[in-house]
Image (cartoon, rainbow, N blue to C red; front, top):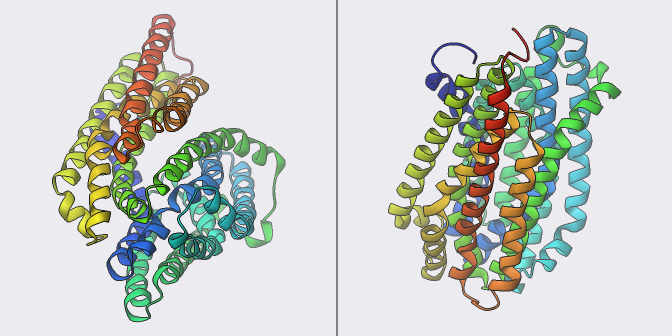
Length: 447
């Protein structure tokens, strides 16, 4: 990261991350596609309407898994074998506890939270059933995510990807079998996802049990070590809370969508799937930006920092924008994977034309925010992003939508919030980098 050409290294770093995230999202996409094609529009709406609820409930712990990655990687850099061992076993206990906690909470709050979101009567029973079965698999989901974080801290992005490929194939086969053959509808796709998550968890745990040296997971050594717990939470909790705040805003938007009926919910869910795929590409380049910039800024290599920002911004806009245009261009084919219902198709096409086509605007604040975090300014982009993508959207829902009560008016808040947030974070980055780069005369550290 500190020497030589940057472009190929950024791509090699980013693409496996994007592929892993896309494969994980593929579980939900396959669920939506199978019930949409072989069950009913209500079943499609039931599965799709749960995405924001699931994100809200798991984002805190997904953020903590990011903290685990950073802490273990730090110990690896220090060659602290005892620290690595303590961190891995502490993280494993956190994964177990968080999975069990999510299981219990998911079972208890499924119906109340979906009712609070104004989920239609013809959808809510199916949505509750899907959510409750889905959360039965949370211990396995968390085991995989934390286990994958451990492997990635070692620089191993391939084996987590292989696990997801195998689990994705299993999920697809089970979806088709349980929904088409056994006519299990929503319950079938939920069970398939739980089994796929279980397979992922078993494979990752098997890998860790057979690692060598301090990386080996030893069941007898499972315990929480306070210093490692504190470090993991210190890094992971803020990231998780930021993700939860985004999810809260999305829940309010989902509640507004729910008022348009089951067809709007189903159509929005189908279009949202493609937004996720494009976002994961942007997210991968933003992770590359924060990692590469932090190392090069620490080494005092200011010109490389500027070059990294330009290249990750360019790559994210080009890749995301290309996918946006491709999916919208082929929207008839894209939507047909999920539904043949004309009304559902109408809402999906509306969302794709407004939201998906303009999604590359979000690269502006994602990459600029990542660059700021790489320079040591993590709170500033978080505040600006929360305001621009969360508070602004809530104000839009309660002040503008009542005046213009249409699906189009609701969807237009996405590009507006991206533009406002992008301008704010880009200005903040320009001010900060001008201040830091002008005074940064020598390296912070010498490697």
